[in-house]
Amino acid sequence: MRVFIGIELSEKMKNHLKTIQAEVKKGCESGKFTAEENFHLTLRFIGAVTGEQLDKIEDILAASTAEQAPFMIKTSQLGAFPKKNKAVVWVGIEANEKLQLLYKRVNAALLSENIKMADEVAFIPHLSLGRGIVLSKEWGEPGAFAPADPVRMKVSQLTLFESKQVEGRLAYIPLKQFPFRG
Image (tube, rainbow, N blue to C red; front, side, top):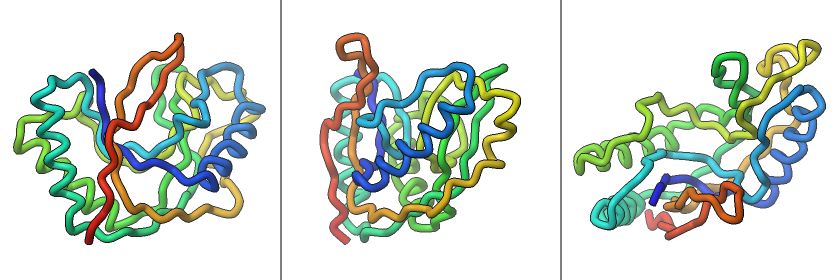
């Protein structure tokens, strides 16, 4: 089973991303776009786990959310992670100390149990719009496109997701939610 820890998005946030995604589609030559039902904010991608590791992850998330108070996040600019001649195109999340501290707490607890990341990368909070995107020359750099009217959303829980293929499509299935109790 492949899992990750993330934040489920409000309908308002999903609609905002869908609108921006439609604009990006107009300016791209090819790519695979994220299905609306898969929009989320990844806190930590883990990858394949055993049943024993899954139990540890659940214990860590329960402990990590026990004293966490809800907080707000806000969208920012469009960005991209280049991969050869393609990119992962995303909407950023404005710098947020509470989100960073939550990530550090969860990540430290996971590492202490020897649950490593699938990819050792820095935590850059973002909402993926698509992968393997080739933007047209007319589009320019993703950062030049500033989505109007950032959207804010209250974060009040973490979700443990399973990532798997369902009927030939990638699906992110919520396995368990961990409400903030602080």
